Length: 420
Ligand SMILES: Cc1cc2nc3c(=O)[nH]c(=O)nc-3n(C[C@H](O)[C@H](O)[C@H](O)COP(=O)(O)OP(=O)(O)OC[C@H]3O[C@@H](n4cnc5c(N)ncnc54)[C@H](O)[C@@H]3O)c2cc1C
Image (spheres, rainbow, N blue to C red):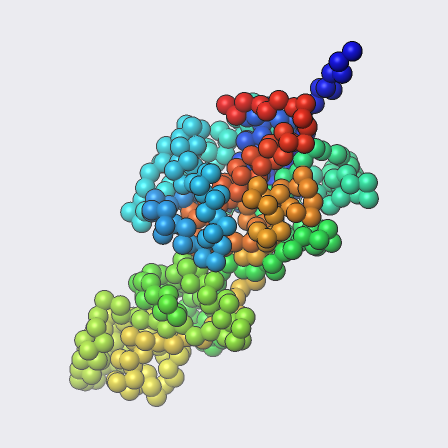
């Protein structure tokens, strides 16, 4: 009598309900795989919702080559992920949820209403409809000696076994939204190679005088040119109690962070009047001042006011501030010493994480067959501009598809489900 293959309906655990984990759950559930999604928080997608607060920047419309260059030294590893689910696929997928997108003047891509909440709501509705079981307030603690997944839940510690596991646990910034990097030692003890988590897209500490920070903390420096090594860009940043932060600083933050790590500090150069030439600034500053104070002279001749004037005074000291040649040179090229990155919890994102060398091309851990990783917990970083979410979605998609292929390969009796 011919032996029948036993029925096989694999169960997959997705741990982490950010964009990467939700995308992995989507790929699997649409292939009729039973998915249980666990998250430590009372609801999923909290960082995704926060990212939507200032305008949900989903991806960027630039050509693939410059897009890929944003991933720096990890460009080669991110490329195949984006080849599978890149910026165009992401926009089409968002549209499939009933959300239109548009390209802003900077080339960044946003949902038409700029919000994350309607998108997340529609997505969760679809995931539930395709059978994904959500288990919130379930913090993954690692594996038991018998190889079961361990969770701290409102009912105490529970254990469960699955046919495959996707870890999408995020980085270590904004821990109050759920991602705290507690997975690092759990994976390290299982032989997974992990690059130290570091702040990315972060602010930096500056040794401000008490007077300067009391007077100027919270004030924006609008339209300055920042130069640091090969980085040169015009933009804005904010003086904070501890130092500086904001989009222009975040854009240069990876190189600044690495320099501080190597040398103990980093010196950036600021052009406070980027729309005027040095010669013009010299002429304006050298113009007879008459009885006017230096600050009103600077304001009327060079357009330097408020926090810009305060910064010049802070960095130059009294004598150089009153020296027209040195003052003009400083307006066009003001050195500012940064002494430390702000703590990782304050950063927009994390650098470091599970090294690509520790995984196969499907993002399955070499040390733990059947366990896949996705999202910000992988060792890549990118500036803001939609590049972070794009790589999280893409890696979630690849990990989900990888788990599906692995399950199919594991069980010869399993018929590959339709991906429709
Ligand atoms: C203020 C801010 C603004 C941002 N704006 C943008 C933007 O406009 N565009 C952009 O591209 N990116 C933006 N980002 C970055 C983007 O939100 C993140 O890169 C992205 O959310 C990471 O997705 P992820 O799925 O890898 O991890 P997360 O979104 O961090 O999700 C991980 C999930 O895992 C859960 N988890 C962690 N540990 C455990 C555990 N042990 N057990 C169970 N669950 C666990 C967490 O609760 C969380 O729900 C922004 C980030 C911040 C902080």
